[in-house]
Length: 495
Image (cartoon, rainbow, N blue to C red; front, side, top):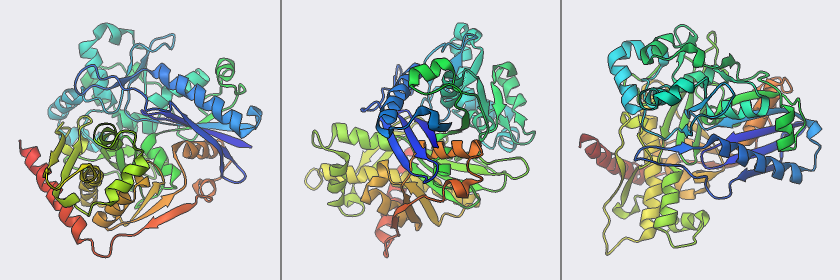
């Protein structure tokens, strides 16, 4: 018996098949092989065509079925992880009305800020645990105000994972955690946030049916099965945003446990056992995959948009032509901690929640033409990304989270020795690098949703730790470099 997991990212779509009996991944692949395009029609905008996600998923599915050498009839359930906060709008025929406004698009910021100011923090924060900010609801308000003809055609709004589930099953539904990502779940009433729907002028009928994260959410249709090489009737039994799913993948379910990821964006995600929030709304709070009203599990998340995308930009525009990321990591190791005075603020990928939804851009400081070369810039970029993580972690500590141990997948920026040593040493936390990824996690989540695994400990009991990264014995150089970085940031925020 096998489980199939999909991870719908903004860079690619990954698919994985997991053997239930061993917990091992027997096949995985991703498409496209180069980073998926993001349309930026104006500064601060970011869109993708949802139909392209389905095309990538189809290619990835064909590849893993070919290499796994199993019968599709042996696949017992499907799980879906997806890029958070994107807005997909469909008409009554389930056709996409416009390109998806994705997570790193900033156009919703003014609408979220206006809602926060007019409704007040005393209304928004206890109910939503966040300001309306730049989340899905604010993006929908932008469409309502700027594309009224398109808005009038909308039958349902969805997140990217909801769209993929609809393509698989024909069912239009979402989850409680999904609505909390949209900023449309009220934690006081344990129902959709009617006060925000009313404020924005949205009809509640735009919201899909709500189903539990771990539950049957539809079955693969004949049409989808024919397109993907699967068999009709396979149940979709798990769905979650990429960061809650990353935490699930690392077996992070309980208060005090911490997960981190560093792909296109970067995240530190901790579990809080109380329904609480940052009074300045600088970190995000969402319902975790196992949240219930009686047993709260709130994912407290600091998200930095300018993470892997900065490293990619450095690779394409600064590093020697044709260099690999692994070779870049070796160049970064040639430079001492602090990059000999070079400092980079990595905020060049849209508005940052941790900076009060400001777009401060990416800035480079301290370059001396007689001393520094591209190696310094490569290291300074990686250090700058880590320091942005820690800036958010300091806020998380202020609302009661302890960060002593970080679980992370052995992937993306965590493949860099400089990156992980800097994160461990500036934070003082031990990092466990674990052999898993979002697609594998989604597959095991499907096993939980289908009742194949009795609980998360059975589902993730076979996880393997690849490496343990301890803080440096002398953390002083890392802390000094962080304080210099923070001073530059604070000066930028005063401008």
